[in-house]
Image 1 (cartoon, each protein chain N blue to C red):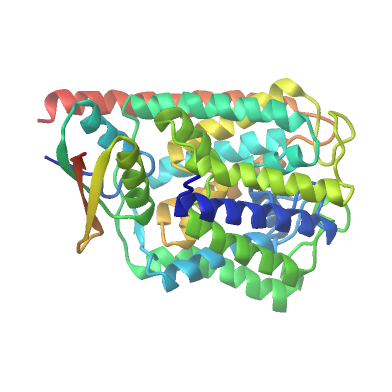
Image 2: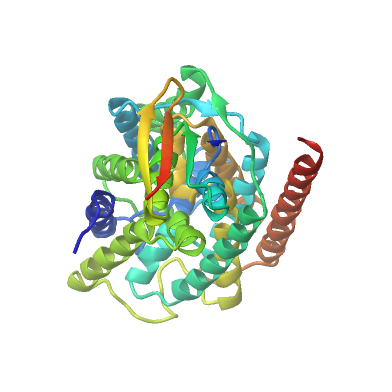
Length: 359
Length: 68
């Protein structure tokens, strides 16, 4: 069989990422949460006192590693390209709602795969929602949705977000008293800093090299009948599944799952909102983080939007818990669909007008 | 014919390329400015039986697509 270099890279990177994800759990992270981009931004927001829910506060070194890993490898490979200016505020708003959707489900697309690999069937319902959201977003892309062109920016602008996360790392290592640390709950469950940071760096490098994207895989399959990118996600799932099986961490079922609830409708809709928003942004929360490291300041805005979304989600009781969803969370999810759809329709309408009168 | 896909985020460069391919344009160029767009457009063009030659330019790459 002729397997392209890109596919080989994705198979290797996906497998390593899946294995690392389970190792992080074995060393202390919450179950099925070796990586969760949404949960970890939420924990970081908590560590910085942007919200005050005591059980989810920790400056997760995995995220810092992902961003800096992407920065380092992109500089080395001469792929660090400061770019930005493609509707930064709209990106902030969409990312805000992507985070709300993720916290209603309790996980980003990455964690959805890890939950599935651990036997959590609620994640299967969420996957169906995620696919539905991606298809809806893809149809809008086909109809001309665009957030406009980005332009070259200064190195300072492109590197600013990396500077912020480097500062967070310095504070975590040398002045931790400035930060909040959960004493109980998911935020208190953590692998040693050096392990988490190294894991983030390795996965950050792999994800940058292989253009890993949990939303892009399904999108490419739907839009272009191309399964290349999807291969990465599948390998994460398979590798983590085998690791979970070997280490006795595979528990098949809907109930009794770690940091999860069984409200199927909102698992579906929460992740549908994540898929919908991610496709319009051009990538899932992981991909946004990697692009931010590469100097894309639009993706840096997405990162900030997700942090803000997480803070709001916990300050206003929108995030779900093991007990289930909240009225606020359900309302915010619907609001997210309404806001993102309204933005998309306005943009598509304006594009059509331009096509008629612009030439 | 030339498609300027510079500054467009994924997957718009591929969508623009696909439009030209569906319109049965047999020879055209796509300008891209990021590595992911370059790889994605190249991969897609090959699945549609187009040969791709890339030239590095000041802003990124010029991809010349030619129907096989």
